[in-house]
Length: 498
Image (tube, rainbow, N blue to C red; front, side, top):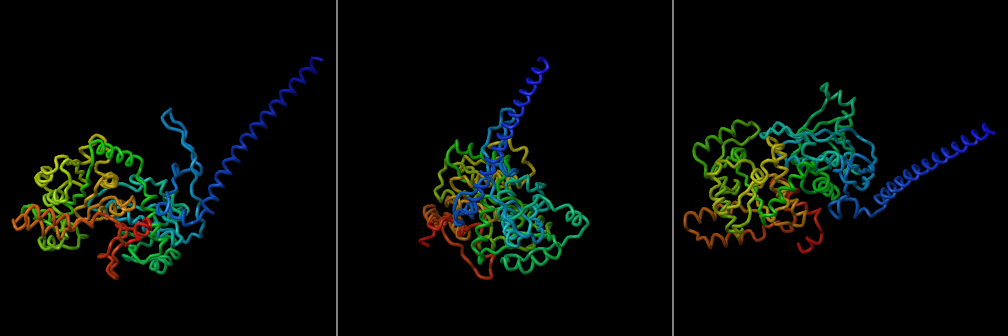
């Protein structure tokens, strides 16, 4: 009896254990099935929703947000009580296509020149059906910034958010990487301002032949106009959705904006009066003879700055020089910018220092820079000009008014981004007319009232309002830049009256 009772007890325990395991298995299977359904339903929504609404996030609808792109369904887990639980996020379904090869690119120039180039290279890779390797950033230019792509942009988000368009890898597959390291790599600069037909006829055959092609220059390599609508919209999608700064840069950028907002309205002045800009452009108005000589020596020291002999006065009168700080101070006052407004300087070190800034700081006491607003928090970004430029870019987007004193890459790319954000006020200065008015005011032939009225009248329709790009056939350098006014990606109703 005792033995039988012991056997019955063991049998009962076994049945209970087996039942518990079955329940646990069923629970786990149900969870997996539930998440599978969620993923598939989301994927079907992407597949079957009308393409005009979902195809191009950021142009006609809100972009598809990916909080944690490293997983198909990402769930943030609490870490030492400091992280908040996050909701599951579904990525866009991968685009399946036959891979024609691999495209490596080396961007050249400053941050915003490289930013536009990245948008172009993603678009080209998409329409050649190739795999793009995460772009290499310029480390050899004047600024000598050692930053890699992942030091400035959120590389995981970049790759994941575009997976429904193009495959992007951090590096080549091992076999191809070894070949490249051994020197087997075809490298070339594509022709500037080319349309997609050039890439299909000239670059794609090379990719198919060599498996890997390296484009060693990327600035202005895709045309402004004459491209299919879907290409233009993909350029916008990359620029305004996929190219997100790293969390460190975004957090500090938001802090800068918060500090500025606490103190009232602010104007971002993109004051292009750094030493390299003056040396490159040959613009020495207002400089001493010693400074002009220093700038000329610098221009000759850089062989890729091709223009050497420059007539500064003639160039200034043609409106081809950045405004000086003194000229800028007069223009801001003439435009009616309130003296109490903060003037945030989005630029590097101003050539001539406080001596050249005196007129501006006298007219506007609250002239600030990121270095003065959050000095202790910028230590990690020092000596990384592109990361510092990224902070200026974020502040520029959020400003009440954006005023560039020269039409360089940052001025143009920020102008276009502010249009995309709702045509935020951007004053596009007519430098040729301004220097003529300034000279007349300074020599006494024009009163302040007349000077101010003339400046106001000439800029009333230069505030970043809706407009279509000016196209100049066969002169792409002279026509409006795509990224300054990507009208294909802006709401149609804003152009109905144009």
